[in-house]
Image (tube, rainbow, N blue to C red; front, side, top):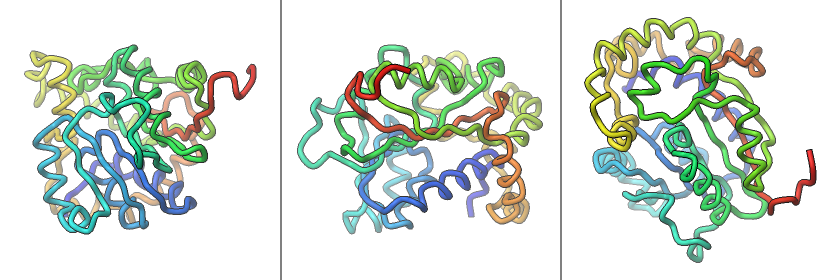
Length: 267
């Protein structure tokens, strides 16, 4: 059993709570990491395609989801989502696009292209669900090592999406106060175990970000499964829901829909 970090567990609990209210359909996920969100969508009856730039990540996903790939429920693609033809090829329209800790890795031009390509893939009544690092004032060593270009605020998200013809419908700050309390320890562990990654290019740091192995930060001994699991994290999940409007939350969850620019009017 893989033991997940507390912040990741809190994000997954919130994500699954929101998605359970949606009828299953087809999805595209960009940057699936170890496949935690992918696995939850598949169990809820969704089918779809995941994209990643890392050969190692793709190989592990193919191993983990061999059965779902074999049945046609899941396709795993080694490649750049931004290089999809526009408009997207026939059959590529989906009900849901998942972007979990991806947009912060993109420079300004790629960030905007990401929204443009996503719009060509999404059905008219579909939506994007995203998770991004939040609170710019908490920029630190982990952002540098993971290859981030920015942290987001709710205001910067709204401005970005509105400019590209999207509308944010639901935005919530997550993992507060747990991640904030653990941040000094997290920064210490990252600095001690991953500082050499600062010598890598931004692209290489991005590729490594989905499979980091920082002991007691992203990787935990299996014995801790009795402490770090979704059941034990439920009280903290209820607490994080009390603080979804906090500007100090280190993660932003959002849901967005696409319309042609100007379709939503001013304001």
